[in-house]
Image 1 (cartoon, rainbow, N blue to C red):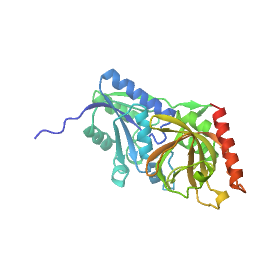
Image 2: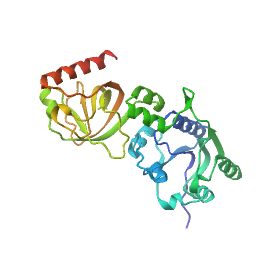
Image 3: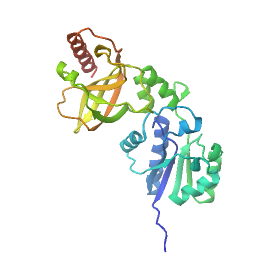
Image 4: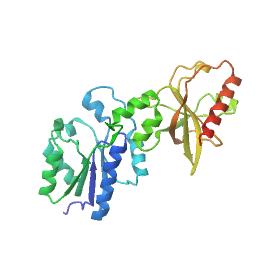
Length: 296
């Protein structure tokens, strides 16, 4: 009985947890090598929270797995291999890992960052990968890290920026506007009575929180782009203490309940504050929308 025929591919190796400019460089190099060799390209990534498991801390992620897949699709990547993180996988030695991945794919080339590590206790290095590739007539491309402002771009830097509400800087390092996806849930409908209906999303517990505030953003719906005022935090005007994500999508009319949408955050607009009348809140939302449109 013959075994499964594997499709020739170039594999981009890494976690790609925020798909920032450094990650994008690795992926673009993988696409270029795959085109040169006339084969496919596969992005290897992890399911679960790898950093949390390795550090044994409550580490938050910038993008969930599904959000990462969506970003990779934007980049023209259709083949994403997701390895779930568990004890057995993390216990695999460096040579065992290389043997294992070569049984999964017909690998013609690898692309990874210069600091790429693999195998148990991260013992495997790019030097080990180079020896393995050479012995198996495979190509290895090593990509240098990407710096910004004299500092290496990293997911931890981006998390710090998100926590501070510095979306302009975070977006520059991400190579795209930071986004958050989720199903629209029913709420009290107060926004509709003010003439500012909102789409409300539930924050995942493992998602990196932003600085509480009101943000300028945008949403793509039915092939069109709409401006959005996004509230990330509490709703003190109505006595709310829970963190909520609610977006008023300008000039859009339609029922979004139950639908999965993606909110893109452009920049921090203002702090959340308590308004003492609905009319005062409506006046502020009108000013927020005008401010967003004036920057177009």
